[in-house]
Length: 86
Ligand SMILES: [Zn+2]
Image (tube, rainbow, N blue to C red; front, side):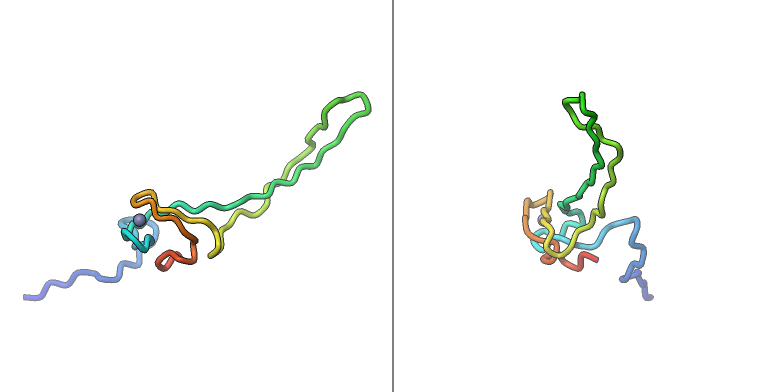
């Protein structure tokens, strides 16, 4: 009697995650990225402060050089060091 378990789950959005941490194998990691915000401002002659007319948030993304850390074992490194991050 054979019992087959699915070894290669293709469901990437739910269920148990695949290992990311190289030390403890945790599927949860923290990645830090930097966002640039551009402000358009103006100043009236009688005002002491500038007024923000609009702001636009730039792209927020990480690359292999972004800082990454594991909240399970406190490992710290770069995204490029993770196990199959994408
Ligand atoms: Zn870890």
